[in-house]
Image 1 (tube, rainbow, N blue to C red):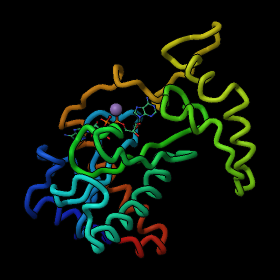
Image 2 (image 1 turned 180 degrees about the horizontal axis):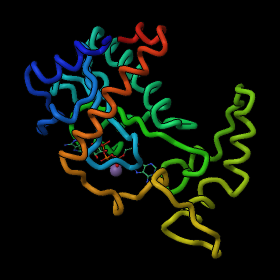
Image 3 (image 1 turned 90 degrees about the vertical axis):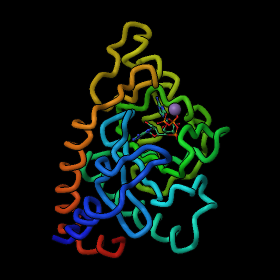
Length: 217
Ligand SMILES: Nc1ncnc2c1ncn2[C@@H]1O[C@H](COP(=O)(O)OP(=O)(O)OP(=O)(O)OC[C@H]2O[C@@H](n3cnc4c(N)ncnc43)[C@H](O)[C@@H]2O)[C@@H](O)[C@H]1O
Ligand SMILES: [Mn+2]
């Protein structure tokens, strides 16, 4: 059991905090300086957080060099894992670093949010990116981007969201449609502990399935 030391270390060691919140039972992976946390109010299933164990790390630049390396190694492992586990087409990797950047919890954390071809709705922060003219290099990248922009980009998707059924079209439905804050529900500890157990066993399988992942442990 490659990760069994992780499982033991989470339960046996000292309590884990996310700022002032005691979250030990919501942690599904822990490395030397970092942990992965299931979200209290996920935007979509698989929305998790990568957090440094040291609660005095408010912002990215507070990490020491060893902490930064461990933080990014964990990000590399869990980003791959969540994409595999939730069969995501893309992943938002987001740090809201500082109150003016939208950070509401004063403890560094990186959001990992699974994204799918159909759920580009309601992500207000992506208006700007719609006009990004990056010269995608991946073979299917441009096709997917054209597809995304084809129906009028994010704005049109927003109109077609489950919230506002613009021009009578069938709105996007399903668990993977990004919800606005008003529709995000705070989950119970029982729900989150179940997700932790599921993710821990699946992460074990994932790491066992691809030897090259061990470099991020
Ligand atoms: N005790 C606890 N245990 C576990 N999780 C806890 C927790 N207390 C708070 N959180 C969790 O901590 C995060 C704080 O994020 P934050 O400090 O960056 O500030 P928030 O505004 O709360 O973050 P979110 O609204 O979750 O935004 C996350 C990312 O998704 C983006 N986003 C938000 N709503 C979106 C939407 N409808 N569409 C697309 N993107 C969206 C945001 O721009 C950002 O990049 C939240 O996700 C909260 O649920
Ligand atoms: Mn928010």
